[in-house]
Image 1 (cartoon, protein in one colour):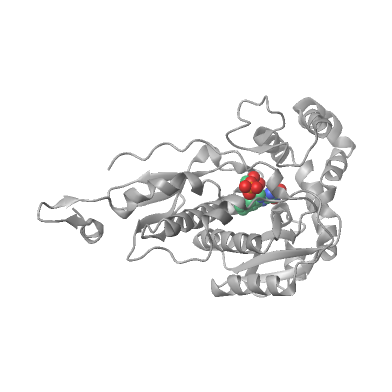
Image 2 (cartoon, rainbow, N blue to C red; image 1 turned 180 degrees about the vertical axis):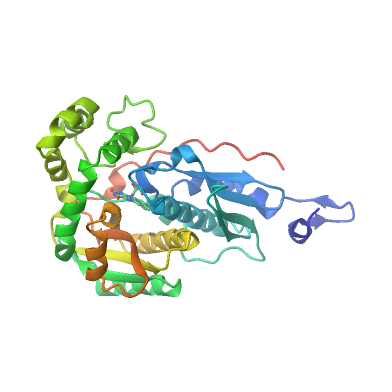
Length: 351
Ligand SMILES: Cc1cc2nc3c(=O)[nH]c(=O)nc-3n(C[C@H](O)[C@H](O)[C@H](O)COP(=O)(O)O)c2cc1C
């Protein structure tokens, strides 16, 4: 028995029989942690159950390639997963904490281990359940200043910074980034691989981006399927296909509103995992105020737009944009759309 086991295993009575450890209690909340936001809905996380901890890592086959060239989104997504898991554990009074220990070779970001007390947060499983990304039309209402100020405060407390910029100020960057995104053969192939544009797709109910999440009607879904088919994409690409595809995203680039950019310092991969945790606190906190988000990673990934974006955000020294998301109030109730599909979680080994 390790020191950690000794510290966390509850011994009952003179018989020395052991009750469930905090880690065993986690099995109740692991399933709902998969409600975490994650890039392309690949659900890249993997939990490796040890005797006195659970390692949090990722599965190579669920890490994006050209669409996430530096694996920033992967680390952010693992951070959203960890924070969501901790929120669930906190609500279930399971005392655990996350200890970062990043190792790219071992595909590990850290460990969940028993803690003295449950994670304290005002965020609830109901928020985790209700939140979803919004890619549809926005109502004209402005996000109240105090809501933006609360988001800025949440970021500051964790050592990050939020820059709030008008959508109009970044629209040209957004359009340029969309052109870059759709013109890249590798990115297009990956988008097709993770798209499930018809309920007949074999993985429609387990992962990826479906027609409902992308707010596409049947005709638009059929057209997207056609345009991304390798032969059609190859044939039309030299004729400016990326411009046509950008038109499909018009909701994402048009209209007035506010974009929030989360900025961090340095290039430590662990800080990107931490940024993912902060993003979850931000998005759930906004959700509690009726505000939804639409993240758009390619503005940060596109080599031509990340620099100008930093300038718009007045990034100084080693500060750099980590997450870009539009905030607003949806024109229709997002609760009418189903949640993102999830893969079945493999049961935890008995301990
Ligand atoms: C790090 C990160 C990056 C993301 N990037 C984008 C993006 O560039 N465009 C987009 O439409 N959605 C983006 N998303 C949203 C995901 O596609 C979404 O979280 C996922 O499909 C699950 O759906 P849900 O959040 O609505 O539950 C991103 C999410 C995360 C966590």
